[in-house]
Image 1 (cartoon, rainbow, N blue to C red):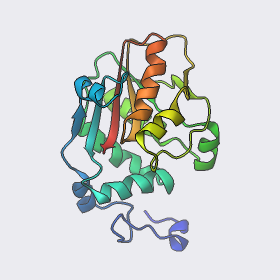
Image 2 (cartoon, one colour):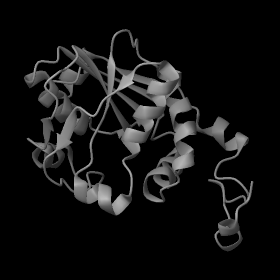
Image 3 (cartoon, rainbow, N blue to C red):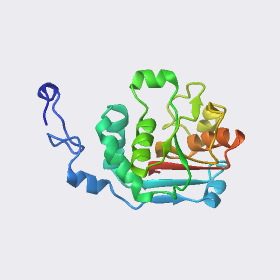
Length: 209
């Protein structure tokens, strides 16, 4: 239902139509074949700690999905989180006795953005899947924007950037993030968790690529 603010800032969908942030037709256009990277493939790519990455869709094949994630993340349209989790659930890992853990933001980035998109996704997924979401990690320093960096630069920027802040840890953790490109962020988070005693760490994202 339209609100007073819509009179001054009318809602526009991903393709520019007014009235909704996303239309049913656009939702269908976001759905591409899910992507899974197993441990063998990840080790070949130089990722030594994350065990599997599950993605609901391919990022490179869908410019509209690119826009959806950007709108959700940077324009702070939190209502899109529900649609993003629906994409993630297309490639749902075997949850079993697992705990979801959002990839943390540094406090300075959280302050400027206003919310952690990974935390919101993790909480919604936990509700839908009836499991726990726990903030097990802390980002110890700002690492800057990763999108325009090469893989080697990302690894350097992220090295030692995460610390486990909980003493009671599950044996199996699934990290939640919006996007995986090189996988460097997920791998560095997995490293911190495994060094603290977690046996298996997987990643679950909206899109891969």
